[in-house]
Length: 584
Image 1 (tube, rainbow, N blue to C red):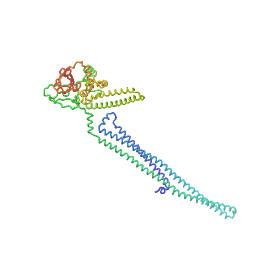
Image 2: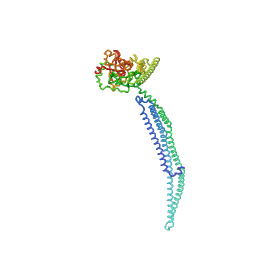
Image 3: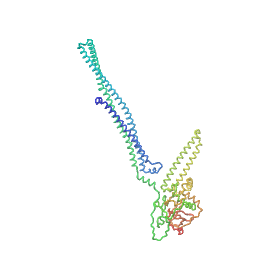
Image 4: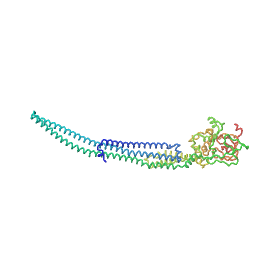
C-alpha cells in the first residue's frame, strides 16, 4: 500500500488532506491548552476555598478549632490544598510534555510538508515543460509536412504546364526539395523530443511522484502516531498524580476517623464549667404554724427547716447560691441619678460597695475575677505560662548579651563592653518585673486552686504595686450595686481576692466614721465560714444585729459587736427588722 502507486494522480487531494492533518494536530494542542487552563483555574478556586475557611489568626474561630471535629475539618482543608497542588502539577506536565512538544512538532511538520509538495510541484512543472516541447515539435513537424506537400504539388503542376519556362520548373523543384528536407528534419526532431518526453513521463509517474508521495505518506503517518503518543501522555499525566490524590483522600478519611465525640464533649466541659455546685432543695414553708417570719422583700428563701444538715460553701462553689436564677429587684426600688450615687459614695463608707461594683461591671479585672472559678483558673494558668515563656526569652537575651560582653572584654577591638551595660540592666529589670507579675498571678492561681485560703501580706503588697500601675481594673469602684441590669451577683473566693487591697485602702480612709445603726436582728439558720474579705463567720443558732438588709443580691450585712461586721448569705439567716426601719 503506497500513495505513490495508488494515488499517483491525487496530488491536490493529498495536499488538502495533509493540511487537514496539521489543523487536527493544532486542534489537539488547543484542547490540551484549554485543559491546562481549566486545571489551573480549578486549583486556584480550590486554594481560595481552602483559604476562605481557614481560621483567622488571633480570632475566636481559632479557639474553637481545638475540637477534634474542627481539627478534622482543618485537616480536610489542608488536604484539599494539596489536592489543588496536584491539579497544578497536571497543568504543568501537560504544558511541558504535550503542548510544547506538539507545537514544535507542528512547525517541523509544516516545513517538511512544504518541502515535499514543493518537490512535487517542481516535478509537475518539469513534465509540463516537456509536454509543451513535444507539442511544439509535433506542430512544427505537421506544418513542415503540409508545406512539403504543397511544394511538391506546385512543382508537379509547373512541370506539366508547357507554357512554363524551364527555369520556373527548376525553381519549383528546388523549393519542393527544400520543403521536403525541412519536413524530414522536423520529423527527426519530433521523434527525438517524443522519446525524451516518454522517458521523463515514465520517470515522473514511476519514480519522482512515488518517492514524493511516499515521503508525504510517511510524514502523515508520523503525525498520526504523534497524536496517539500525545493521547497516552495526556492519560499518563493524570495517572501519575492519582496516587498522591489518593493519599490526600486517605488523609481526609483519616482525619474523619480521628474525630472523638467524647473528647469534644470533655472539651466543652472544660471550656464552660463554672465550678459551682447546683443549689440545694428548697424547704417547705408551713404557713399554718405560727412563726415569726419577717424577711427582706427580695430574698429568695429566708427560712429553713430545723434539723437540716449544715451547709458550707467549699472550694470554688463558695457564695454561688443560685447560678441559674435571675434575681429581680423590687419594683419600688428606683434607680437614682449618677450624681446622687456619687454623693452617696463620697459620704458613706464605700468599702463593700466598691467590692461589689468591681465584680459587677466595667473593664475586665486583671485577675479574671469576673469569670467562674474553673474558667478563671484556666485563664490564670494560661497567663502564668505566657509570663514564664517571656521570662525565659528575656533570660536567653540576657545570656546572649553577657556572652557578647565577655567577648568584648577579651577582644576590645570588637566593641566597647560598657555599651552593653544599659541593655543588660534593661533586660534584668524586665526579668524582675515579669517575675513579680508571675508571682502575682501564681498567688491568684493558688487561691483559686485552694492551695492558699487567703492572700499573704507580701502578695497583697505586690498586688497593690501593680494595681497602682494598672488603674483601669478599679475604675468602677463608685458604681453602686444597682448598676447591674439584672441585679445578679456572683460571690466567689477567687473574685474577692481582687479587691482586698482596695478594701484595705478604704478601711484606712473611713475607719474614723461612726458605725451604721442596727435596723433589726437575725438568727443564723446554718453555720457559715466567712473566709473572704467582707464576709463574717456565723454559727448555727447565733443571734446578730442587721445593719443593712438584702439589696437583691442575696447578701445581708450583719454585726456581732462593734469590731466584727460583714456579709452573710441571706438564705443562711432569719431576719427580723424593726418596724421603724421598715417604715423608713
